[in-house]
Image (tube, rainbow, N blue to C red; front, side):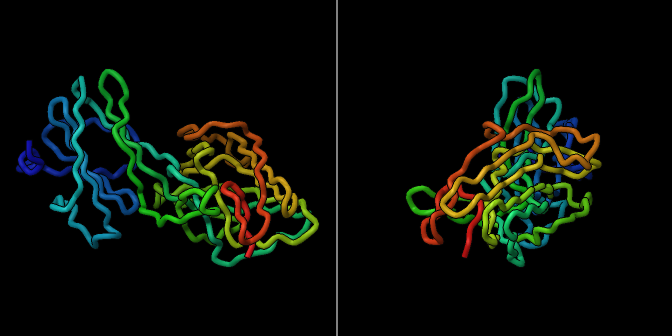
Length: 276
């Protein structure tokens, strides 16, 4: 059945809430604007149609009109859908963060820093059971290669102020805050010009309408030595009453030993700090 046919003469219902479970009928096309992602969902019997369009890439959008260039996907289910659930999840790749102002972490020093990371939108259909349909980025991030050609990995890239304090931003429900504890146990000053944040191994929490990661501690012990990466599995101690939204995409031990770099030209795939 053509997409235009099923959406003709139907009202577009604009949704004000980003996350949650939403009852849907067959008389409406449901519309969400989450970050840069414009999302339309329509159910038809045992089928669900999902369209997406990114305003940042394509300019301003009239929410009452579905653009012809919107990308549609069709899902066929066993049972009729009663509700749609939208939930946040961390991106499906590690994030390479470049501080807007690189900084030195002096020897035997620790510092908490906070980084805002846009989440992905996870779409589920609720019938007799909960069925995962798709994931969409709330903001399309640039990609970068991290590491050497043999042992590197494809990551997302973003720039951040990497501040020691941060304020919640409930006006942007698609932006999470990653809590990092950086520790330099070496006998030299450590220049932090880039930082790989392995959000694949991080849990996601909600505290007073703000998304937070669990506390991630990264300890640098010196060049050519082992760095330690610890995922606490719980949010910062100051975030009392937080609710876990989702588990890590990739579960592993909370304490992970990671090979540090050998030189600026021999960067290993899973190192955390990058010097220039």
